[in-house]
Image (tube, rainbow, N blue to C red; front, top):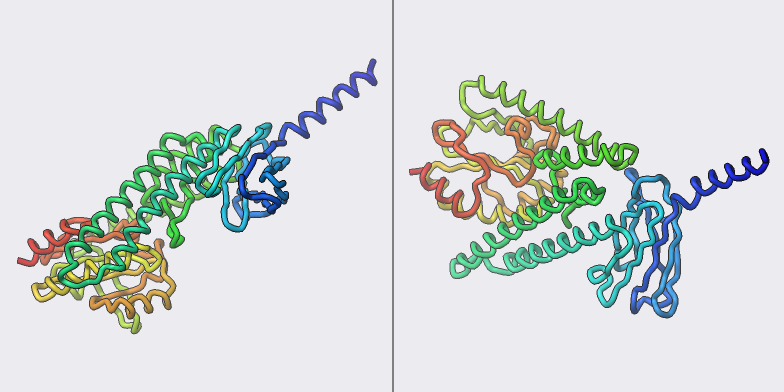
Length: 386
């Protein structure tokens, strides 16, 4: 009897320690016959291929994967020309099928979290495609008087597309904050490698997801890393508030900026006192930077004779890339580099949490507004330079 009990207990242990953390991923990728597929696991530190299979003549494939933990695990189903993200939980039997364009036209069943990743991926791809098309049209439109209205319309359309894109991502994150799919969305990056959600300006969303997931998946390595990021963000924001309080004690209403230009010459913001000043924070990796600088150049040409100046701060740039961009774009105003990126004093003192961002100062040295663009910026500058 005792031996039988021991055997039963051993059987229970084998069941609980083995297949319980196993999952199956299979399906048919039509048109992908006798081809190699990779299954890549995504951790907080790196990515590693954990299995390889070859599809049959019909494009059928099957993976059996032993998950590293009881919490959902991120994987990518990969071939050279596409990558399908999956969020796999123990015991799931996931089916991935596709016709035609595999990266866009696949379906996934058997995994609620993986279906959410598919929903996010579709939103992301559609938004990026729209913005890329508008950016290309703008670049192809010559900056000559007869095309000025078209360029302005394209710039406005691009701005509206970006705002809509960001709103869709925010809605997805808020709606699905209890799923690790929301964490995946938070850390996505734009094609230029800029974060979709800047860690400072979007602190509230990181905090929301962290609070939701820490209760549901406290042992997940991804959640632990998120909590660490949120704590770092909190400390950065507290420092920014302290610097802002110090700035209020200065003789003028705006915090001083003391940075160096491409010739290593000191450029004080206060050297422009008595003029209307636009402080612009940017970096060369932002796909919008070229478009915005073109808009600024038109404003500068028109209003500089009336007392308008631009003090442009490059944030998070490699020095060589920044200098190259300044020279190529022939930027006529003061351009300086913040060597400490988003941890720099200039960024923190103005509470800038992402780029692009700008601050407008009147001739009396008073901050009159933030983040004016397009027609709103031109109208404001025209009023201030009268």
